[in-house]
Image 1 (tube, helix red, strand yellow):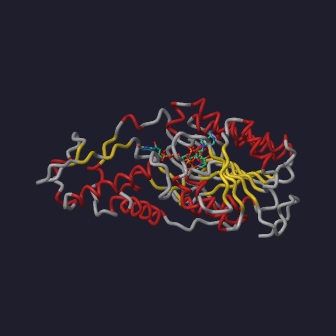
Image 2 (image 1 turned 180 degrees about the vertical axis):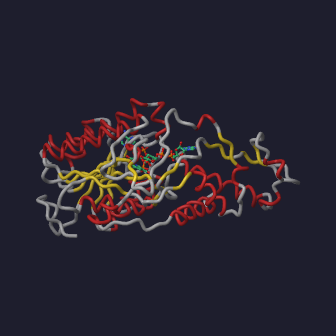
Image 3 (image 1 turned 30 degrees about the vertical axis):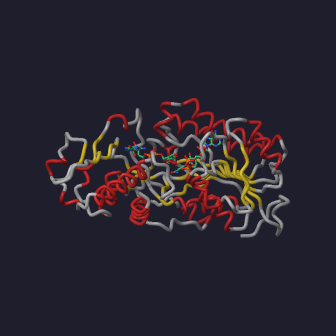
Length: 371
Ligand code: NAP
Ligand code: GDD
């Protein structure tokens, strides 16, 4: 992929990219990819009283990685990061308050990080007159579709033409940021792309998202089985009673809490985060900025995820091990997401490389190994 842009860094010398959200799941995978591609990476990290660099621990000694302090909600800190790195040719805005359920409890903080943060970057780019020198990526989301879908006679789907009908403060903030990207592309000629990414997961996924919550629980439960030298068949039916929230096995003292979940009937188009960051990078290598849906094209319910995940520890009656807890239901739900990645396939030549089964197995195996 050759660089045909006007920016000075599109010469043979090393390219520099700025990533906000580098300590998150996607930021860490993107940093892996860009460093592998021989970029200099500037990661924006917000100040914290605890260490947030767990996911990029393996990269901390890399001489091409520099971490700088900055908060996406604070215009001046983003302005300064850009001012000090005006030779950067790519800016990936991945920072956000990304938990949908949390956004109902903290709508303003979600708005600030998820929408205002995007505006702060766009504004700083223009204020520093960098719009012809830097390419911008915004982490848009399939959550923006909410309850909206199109139908192709065979099944429901969402693609770049599907209208948005957001169902959470998070999704509303993402929609506004998405529109801001379009505006800056049109108004200032900025090479700006928005990746409308469907859910993507992996061993680095935050532990409060449903997939990782399930695989983490399985990892710990498997450890409980091993510690007590018992097999799933030793767990008696009566102990798996619907009204009981603990799991017991005959002949042992220790018990284990059941997995507490909310709505398990929602469907998601789940892919692997390591595959999806390649699409982010590809978007910024195109001649023009644009919007792209990134997904697998397959949709599975949380029930199906549970089925597949519990299979890894040879349990088929997974429904006996969970409790549906009202505290994990949301005031509004997104029931069905299934993307169509035709545009990403034809223009970016991108396609997902990891199947649903491989993804679930990878996550369960990781959490079994690390529990
Ligand atoms: P994540 O693991 O929750 O990471 C979010 C990142 O944003 C973290 O590095 C976090 O830093 C940072 N951040 C939050 N508030 C900040 C602030 N005020 N200033 C600076 N940094 C801040 O999310 P992810 O799964 O990697 O997702 C990356 C992006 O893609 C997000 O924008 C998300 O909304 C979007 N997205 C994700 C998916 C998905 O399925 N994963 C799908 C579509 C879109 P700390 O470490 O300090 O908390
Ligand atoms: N988190 C969570 N915890 N979700 C649960 C639980 C639970 O205990 N029980 C059921 N669910 C259901 C949710 O109600 C939702 O329907 C589904 O599981 C997925 O929830 P999450 O894993 O939290 O992901 P999300 O789809 O809401 O949001 C993720 O994907 C978006 C892209 O569509 C996040 O990564 C967003 O940042 C991203 O934009």
